[in-house]
Length: 487
Image (cartoon, rainbow, N blue to C red):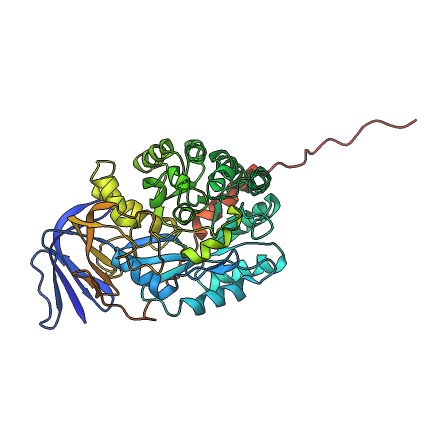
């Protein structure tokens, strides 16, 4: 089956031009004006819309066991919903239990992902440290196409790791040519603040943001950056939600450190007033970590995307329905953390970004696919409309409108943090593996056809960094032997 997208304007992160795009065998075979196609080719009329790389959401949690329950979205429903919103790939997270082998956990997640309708890859979390973890990190990079490892600085007494593990794992990432990533929140301080709030009688969802102020995120971001700097490793900080951590990234980048920031669509459009909703279920539906922030942080996050301090956008898509959230009705610390967003990210980014003059269409492509593909080393296979790239594409209607609602979304959850938001700029057509999977508001997906996308490491860059570190390493001072003679 081949597909010809005719009459659109191709938009990459660095260029815009009118052209047809012809796809065959899962790849882009030709780009040009007035292209011919086989008589049996599927022809898509782009109708003056934009033809862009399919979105890559670099931060999702499908079917995640967490806080005593399991996320309601699985790999089939989640990747299908993503394609309804223009996303053709997700990077999910393998999260081993403490003392569980990384490869064992990776195999568990691969089995769950076997039902995916869209393409996927994995970050693997380091939740403990041993010689086994160090060895299995190497196996995952060499044999399984994993080039990024996640570290939680939050969730004390669960999956949080201490600074010594960060140091050891960052060093190992550098040796392997992998990218270390962190969830930056000071878990010790959060734990103490949660305890104090509960003792003061604050048990509702409003306690969640009070226990995780911007300062705990900023401190952790600064600490992770300092450790990465001492090691010489790059660092990718997930779900940056506040000016404090964004400023830490800006300082590091200005001094020459390779630090990347990821921003969630939710944090760009929703503020902390949601936690003061008198309806418990509404407030609890917004509980995620880091929490929603006061509006001035949104301005900082948009500025970060505009000036390049932040490079990617994601969703931390992790769905829990109202009965699951109700586990924390009398104790906010027991409300499962997570919200949806994989279907809505690109529309929110276009409507709030491009339509409001904060982003150009090229910058939109950069922050929704191209930068992610470059950081995680799958560019130009993904993140670019080019001959030889994967036929993972979206035809974008810049004038299309819709109202976001849990009643009409395709995500397997009964709540949407963007409920009632009217967006301008919608996905008209999604092409995955060269096939039309979303058109005219209808999904045409198949369970289990999604492909695992391996991501190679960065040996050349990292070899250079290690050589530089070796040259700068302090050495013992060689002294002249003593000439003093003992009488």
